Amino acid sequence: MALSSSTLLLVKSHISLSSFSNPSLYFSKRTSSKPQLGGLPGENRNRVRRISLSIINARADDRKEDIVIVGAGIAGLATAVSLQRLGIRTLVLEQGESLRTGGTSLTLFKNGWKALDAIGVGNDLRSQFLEIQGMAIKSEDGRELRSFRFKDEDESQEVRAVERRVLLETLASRLPPDAISFSSKLANIERSENGEMLLELEDGICISAKILIACDGIRSPVAKLMGFPEPNYVGHCAFRGLAYFPEGQPFEPKVNYIYGKGVRAGYVPVSETKVYWFICYNSSSPGPKITDPSILRQQAEQLVRNWPTELINLINLTPDDTIIRTSLVDRWLWPSISPPASTGSIVLVGDAWHPMTPNLGQGACCALEDSIVLTKKLAEAIKSKRTSVEDALKAYGSERWPRIFPLTVRAYLVGALLQWDNPVICALRDNIVVPKLVRLGPVLEHTNFEFDPL
Image (cartoon, rainbow, N blue to C red):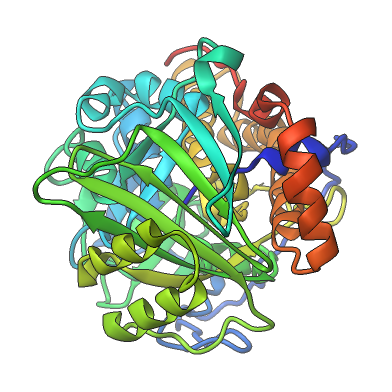
């Protein structure tokens, strides 16, 4: 969900990029091979399981893999495809019975498209989704405050909203048929005496791996094992949906933002027949999990009942299986305090390492960037032998942190500013800041990320 905004200009951060300190080892060692599982504090045990590390003797009948990736989301599949392009095979473990294609869409800016081009799937996806030409910002009464054209500010900018399902299926199609193991939920990690990891799945299957790449999302058990705290709830929740127009949607190819008091909304055409929309609102707590589409639809409509009618129409035209409500979370990777991205031959990628709020539209883009950088580091270590795998993973973390930490902070600040509910401040935003002060160039400066092709 891209909730990026013109107010980004006001919160461009200049954060010190000091290096990581050397962390202590975040694994607890034991001598028994018996798995130890327990629910995380405050979490449902069926959703997140504690994973522990042991030191044991490897068994002769264990399946052996050089590289195992946990999670077949965007980060996991992009990393697998990137490594595959360089001739490095991986096994992807996915706890679901199939690809997790639920959800709506995500907005990719030019840095995300550069990564997809490097992976080799960019053109396949471009042909299916509209290029977004610009953005318009409105007040809750429908008054247009400002509009921009992306190419006027940056000729190289490329913005498209992409269905998550299509992105995942496209990435998965680039892998060999046996590259993804479904219904494979990680239950325990044990370290063998030769330094490899023994991954025990909930069905009892054991896999010996030399390298473990954790792409298991914002509630990553592997990240928990490495000493990372649970992601922080930022005080906002969001409804999201994908409206369907069987006869063709009527909107221009631009992002439309609507700002209210403590509530903001937006919508953007995805294809000729689909339009992505969101409504973000303040909430003191995440609240109970709701999956009933009729309740979600009713709550979303209630938030914008007096707003421009196109929002209500979009909500009503959203199929039940594409309307969701989520709480927004992030994790700030404080220098010298947070654990590093890797420990030994275990490394985190994407949301498992750096969950961020969607206010810059950079969560998926950064996960794709991660996959490219990690692939290059690992490939050099594996093929040239000039550096160790452990050093390659450390180099990945050191290179990515100066990019990730400021973006995470900036995304949080943008959300905090846009969720103001004070009438005076909102009036100042609508009548002075947005119409007269905002420039699009600095707003999208974070999309200027360069890297060499694979």
